[in-house]
Length: 313
Length: 276
Image (cartoon, rainbow over all chains, first blue to last red; front, side):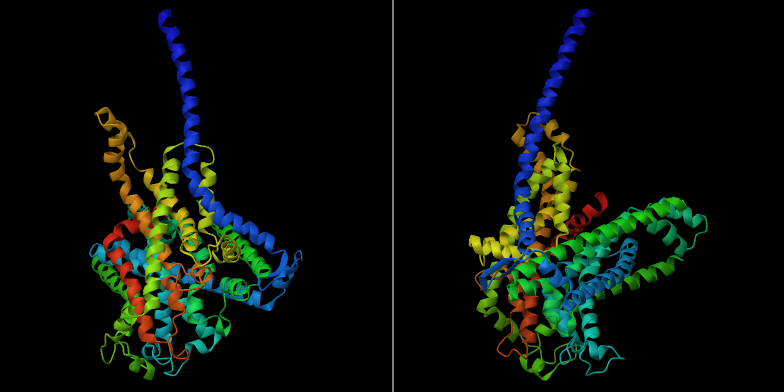
């Protein structure tokens, strides 16, 4: 027996040495494989962001590069005390809240239909991907032309709208047209994410609720929605951050006229059109911080809900 | 009860189709309206006189054709590069244990949420210094980077599902390790890689902010940027028909891809949300 135990201990030691060798080499291989992706991600996002942070402390206009001067936080105070900055931020927040809320309701209805449907699944899946795939600029043109005074069908189709009504002549109608184009394009994405969440809800639980006499409404609020909270959170988070970056539709549809400018549009105008790199960089940093804040708020909001749900249960 | 739901589902089906297709049908209809008709004002949905003139004009438009070539070239190269790097990274994340795995995944997630506009200024400055402004690589590099996160997440979710033991099983049966990899793993991994490629291509085909900020001539301007600068001879009267036609032309490739690969695109889009 003793002759057997000795080699065994030897085996274990060897195995351990081999194990740590393997861990080391796996570690090395892993790092080597992710390196190219990481290098590019740092090069194109982290480095420019640090540069924006640095440039935002200077007065720096590209047309007068010799005038570059360290001004500390002056650019930030300029921006934060400017009416236009707050107006554009308000527009962006409004577009984000309204579009995401509308999309959540319509997207959920679409997801319910797609979940139920047994015929023509391919047809519906293909159609729902078309708005997702179409270039935003193209969708913006389609809607701009649809709302156009002379060449659009909207005034003709809506009975309560005057034939000569100019949608782009005033702030609220223009904002409405922009939101319609945004909602049209991105609702399908929301619907797909919600459909994925819906398929995670167990049929057994729904059946049990039905047997217990729960109404359709009760089943929706007590069984379906709580069970797909994670999918809803992901959908809301992604869409909200995406909506906060809104730029293409506004650029095409109004060019920011009628005070429809968004925060992204303001940043673009400062940097590219006015080549105010210092002031524009301050706006870039603020835009980045707002996105972080929104992400944090949404995660926080849904966590609170989760805790409440657990408390009730 | 059953009867009622099926009627509701039918109505829903028609509503979804109408929602998705109305603007597409509208822009196609507009592309067949003549310049005279839109100049005079044409508030009805369908064209009065059906004409192909817009298609002839747009296909003879040098600037548009250049933009189309740029879009195809830039999107294709960005897609290939992004998919190669993302495959390497996703393989490592799905199959290997190494330090920094979480860091890579959270970094990718952070970048996916990044407001692209906030990078426009510094990139504009950097690209001018490096001579990348208004060049193909000047757009390929950022496009590749911004699609890496989605590609890495999609692919690593996908690779986690692959039964890697099959590779060893094949080797036991006498295959060399290269044969085992090529004959067993590659066919299993291909659909995921392909899905990541389609999503990357969509992004590069669609991107607008960088396209108008980092280019200045038709030498590298892509279709979305070119469309937005497309004013025609009379700046107060945009060429509705031609813009609509150009829109139809750039939408066709997307619709073809969607028709062919809808199942994979849906799987790719939702894999992150469900498997997280």
